Image 1 (cartoon, helix red, strand yellow):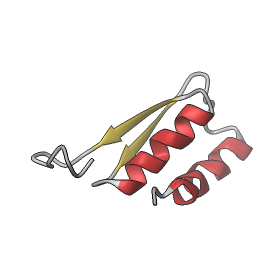
Image 2 (cartoon, helix red, strand yellow):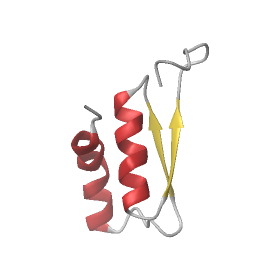
Image 3 (tube, helix red, strand yellow):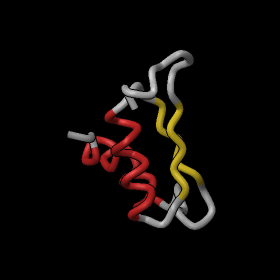
Length: 63
């Protein structure tokens, strides 16, 4: 399963305090797979741009 709740848990405090504005900020999700997928999914639900940062040389099948 993609780590959607884990990603949201990292972003929620910033949303509540106003440190993250989904209309102007991009969410950066460094990961080797499921966490980045979950983060990008959360970003899309909030109509924000999510960027997955993957390790160099990671296989396409992994992501």
